[in-house]
Image 1 (cartoon, helix red, strand yellow):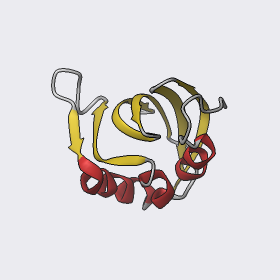
Image 2: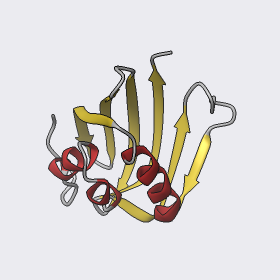
Image 3: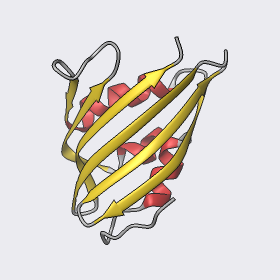
Image 4: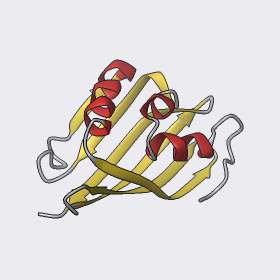
Length: 120
């Protein structure tokens, strides 16, 4: 895992958040953050777009209520940009891989695009 090049962004908090502390993860988003999700169901021409921490919180509550584990695989922060990889495994063995690219402002995520794929 990389270290933050932008003062104030906490990559360790990102790890803790992804690996099970949804409230910690949510705290890394700016109030006006935008999250775009691209996957099999929400393809690039029509991604799922969440606006603000309230909508992002609903997604995180849903994801973290599931019987699965999450692991931050890698994180690179350079200036006001960040990329990270996350792997997940459901209790039944189904695997998910998510790759994210994000823009930062004042140490918070303001724009993120996440591309995810899972076993079918």
